[in-house]
Amino acid sequence: MLCNICHIKEATLHYTVVMGDTSTTMYICEDCAKNKGLLPASGLPIFRLLLNDANMDLVCNRCGLTFKEFAKTLKFGCSGCYDVFGKDIKSFLEKLQGSPVHKGKSLEKVNIETLEKRKKIIELKKALKKAIAKEAYETASKIRDELAKLENAV
Image (cartoon, rainbow, N blue to C red):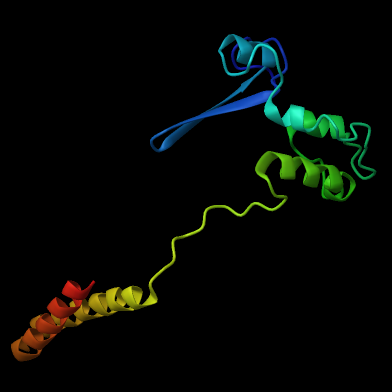
């Protein structure tokens, strides 16, 4: 793929800008990235620096992808690449994110009691609407009172 800026050189980087609900991805060469200030003038992207001690001569025996090509595109050619490059990828991920396993963001501890109360509130609101629709005002007032207690507790 050619660079989206100069349309001459091969794009070796992709740059994604997210604004609100939309994202725009540009595929650019290293020279244009440096000129736009997206890369330090002195160096390669961080992933290339981290891959320096990997065995760049490794070749996938199934699809023929070299580790050097993987380092350039960060895309595997086939499922066999995982087996061939696995050790070096694991090392790369440990350097990049501190662990070979991506843990993502974890939710705050959820208070089960609060969740149960919220669920009960939703059920009571539905029951209240039904009682009013049936003109069962006595039942509706009891539900309303119970609902008020629960909403104050949450």
